[in-house]
Length: 277
Image (cartoon, rainbow, N blue to C red; front, side, top):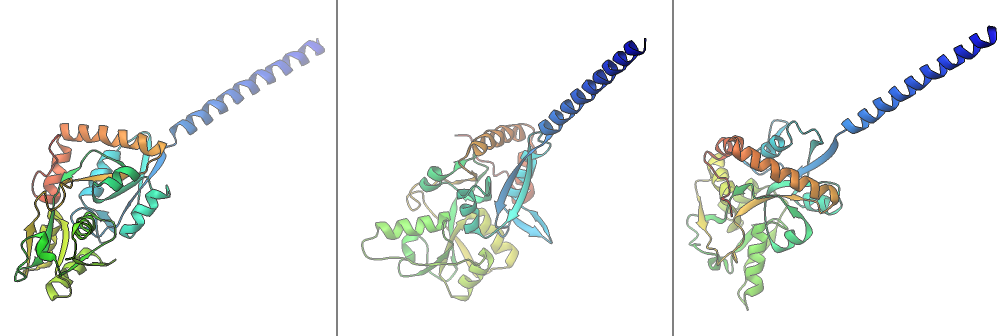
């Protein structure tokens, strides 16, 4: 009897141990499955109304739209990093960031290097100049000083003009100064022009009281038919491909439920959603 009792006790202990082990494995599996993939988005945070700071809080159209896209996601956790403009692109190149959110336009180089979301806003480029400058077209910038940042759409337009010009060139200065400082330098006469998106130009002129500045529209010929929409840039990786699909799917949902238009009205005072191609 003692031997039977001992065997029964051993069997019971083994059964209990098996149940505990199975439970722990199940718990571990659930914990691993519930862990979200961190997606890091980078922005410069100095381009009102697209990406800027109110106190210590990062906000703006690009920021809040992306937050809404990833809101309540069961798969992804979105985090933000604020860096200099050029650092966004180098961070995407090195896979440090998955998303670049900074009112990015599309060009051939970006299409080659990155994945693009569906367009998030219709926002053509314009030239910002002094009202008394006599500048009314891109060709009027010949012999003038234009300021820009490396790698943006304004730089692309200026560089392409100079490339196609036989002799007469635009004097291009590249800077790391924020856009407000650049426009202030134009108003003071240090520079003559800055090519920037229309929404940014209108907002900056209004908010900073740049009463001596005006906006000059650019024709499609002057911009070599540059895309008038802006996008999120996404790293060309397996994770990036999945994120691109996720973003585009969520954009459709936000358009259908009206939340996307609400954000456009909030930051632009108008519906600036891109028209469907």
